[in-house]
Image (cartoon, rainbow, N blue to C red; front, top):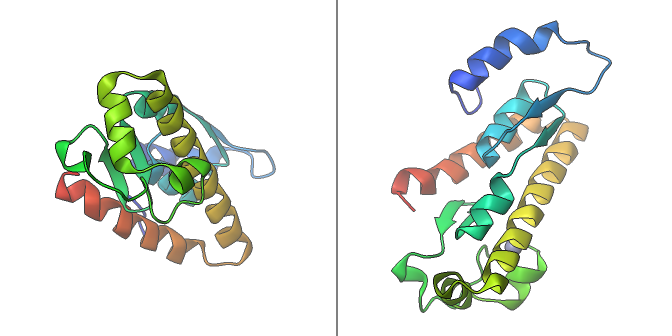
Amino acid sequence: MKICAGVRFKVLDFAAPMLPKDRPRYLMGVGKPDDLVGAVARGIDMFDCVLPTRSGRTGQAFTWSGPINIKNARFGEDEEPLDPDCACPVCAQWSRGYLHHLIRAGEILGAMLMTEHNLCFYQALMAGMREAIGEGRFADFAADFCERYRARAKAGA
Ligand SMILES: [Zn+2]
């Protein structure tokens, strides 16, 4: 099964089997949430990337249903949290509408809150993958995640 297919993963399909199986595997500069899931499916253990912080500063939030750009006008009056399925402090306290206002006004608090949410989302995603691996259901987790995540991306959110 190919999870979250792409050119990068063709390289990983080639290179990852050559790495020692008893050592952690690090992939620098990756990446989007679906890229992380696809790389974990190919045996990668660790990542670092500016994406959750840089995207947060510019108004992009990563959610379980795909990325959203909080600057879009449709979020101006939205009382929902960034991600109703997120347990982070930002989603517990502030609405999309308030974050929309903060980012559009250039308030530093907007960048801070968006970044906090994105980092929490990435932590929860990695924790979810670790749990799924431990329970022997990673393939189902990955397939479900990618289907849900990419539905919004295709819709142009
Ligand atoms: Zn959140």
